[in-house]
Length: 207
Image (tube, rainbow, N blue to C red; front, side, top):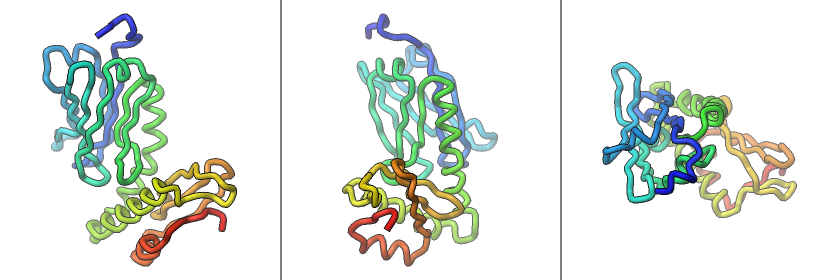
């Protein structure tokens, strides 16, 4: 490993506990990895203390195993050591929901990303607080998964021609916003909506 290319041997990592939903951050230095096979990021919440993220060294790379707070699966990502210590900001998304669940980098940038994502994540959690939480989770998960699939296949666009579409959850609804012209479209989180989306071939905002 060429230490001459490293600018800062300290990084802030932030993650969301999939068990109690607490958002945590931790400072890591190069010494956290010294002589260890794995670094485990634990939820600091009293009574929880579950392992949320495991980072393993593999030659010149780090492998991240992230317990996803959105879909419940374990997601694996790999980056070079040089990239981890040099890049100002790294973010990893739930591949199903397209929502950031892990952040690493410079303190200010990580904190800004946490602030931007806190409202979205809180809105998702609010959907699961009632007695039908399992039904709500499955429904919103299925809708987000379908929207993500449509976006990946370039079938979500705006009437202005842009495909640069942002997804947010506001007051229980999923809001699609064109980042170019700022037009938006609300997607209700209902069974009827899911049925329509499963049959839909495309979504156009502004029509």
